[in-house]
Image (tube, rainbow, N blue to C red; front, side):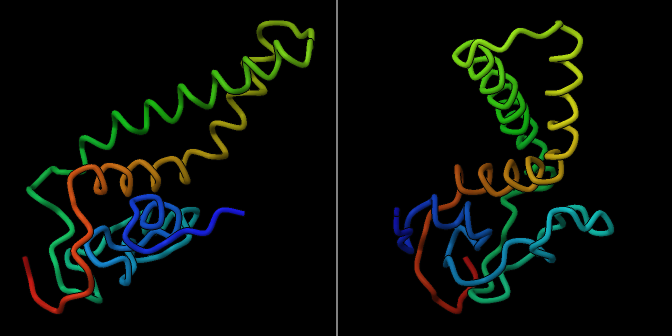
Length: 131
């Protein structure tokens, strides 16, 4: 089993923690399926008080990550279909993969935001100062 260590981007992404300190929660609600808040992020980290958005509209770039996650989702199912030798009609495959994609959309949306943030923010340790 892989042990996630603080200080790695993977730790921040999989645990939904602040990219700066890996202590505070990145989202206001850890459950991506709570559609009332729909992966709303804190303006400042509750733990280290650092800003979680570089500029206005910063998270619009997460659309590219979300697109990549969606493509990876479809390609994974397509390769599994080929390797396992499953014969299906094209539209049955589209409906099956599309259904799973629809169910996983809130999770992919949350993952895309935390991945995007980790692409531009570095781990700085737990310091109680704004930067």
